[in-house]
Image (cartoon, rainbow, N blue to C red; front, side, top):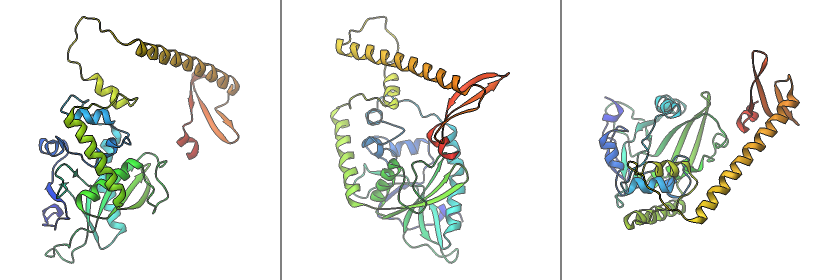
Length: 314
């Protein structure tokens, strides 16, 4: 019998079902005027993947860019079971079972799909575990910049929003994180439920859903997700002119002028750095690596900046 077949007692939330991501049933459970745990960070402007503007259009039933699988998402999915098993190995006596999709018992619009529910392991195949004691979130990350020391509760802020929403939805009070960084750095974190944070997120979600019902579209911001959402709104092409405000034209001109100047400044500083490197490989300053040179057929092929992460790793 698989762990998903066990009749595990439910937490306080209501189980909608064990749905496969990307299926019609999964999309239906997340559709309409509801807010999921992966969406709540966008509601409060803290999501790295979507903006309030893009989420608003999704909830209003308007066109949004299609989801595109990328290597980070693919390998995160492939490694989830492996990392979850590592957590179980590190915690004898505890079982991390697939959680399914849930809604809050009183607020139908509050939804969550945690990675795992944590139970005390049954002593035999006939024993049913007691009520879930906590949640487990499994993450993979190429870098550890936003993650604090192992064992702390210092995690990326959008993940904190996510698990606070999950705990509030299911009625649980602790979330454990199993995190694999750079493919080899395994860490664990623990986040406890905070009633004030949860209340703030609920209030923000209710205000956001009210704007959807009232047709109050958020202002356009500088988030890439916002621009990509605007791109998919028009349907077709009409050969006509559209008058736009003079103030917007001024901002357009200023932005492109600033971009051109920044591009020229970057070209100049790259030339100065490359000139000083000469036949060397790296430009450094007081122990900090600034840039490195690649060579092809004896000549400079490229000059690349060291990112903050690469500099720290070195």
